[in-house]
Length: 163
Image (cartoon, rainbow, N blue to C red; front, side):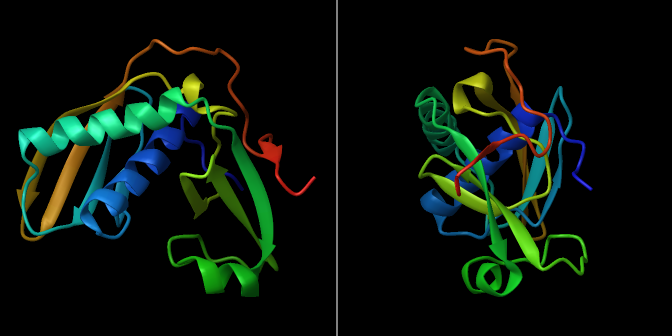
């Protein structure tokens, strides 16, 4: 059963997570709460972010959004997916296959939620606050209402990259 996340926010979260991995060589967020108006991700980290780092993260995420990259799904058998991805965050399933969501060539991640079909549908990403306590960096963010496209996908309707 797909998670009922806002597709724009959920796709932005994937891009944001990959940006954090690329900039800081940290793991993806270990906890998140996604809502249409604002969201948050928690990372295992050693400090709070600087203002320059916040601006750089926003810039990089928004650059990816502006590429208008396709968001596609691919289905892998579970054994193959386990070799390529950490499946620990997926709900326990006795499924033989795992759905991977690919955002252009920027990010690929096992996922059960809904997404946009192209990144320009996301709108503008903005970090609204950060905090750090006991080894956990919390980043709160939101999206502008402005978006280049209006077509939002429903869970399971992404372009299938295997066809």
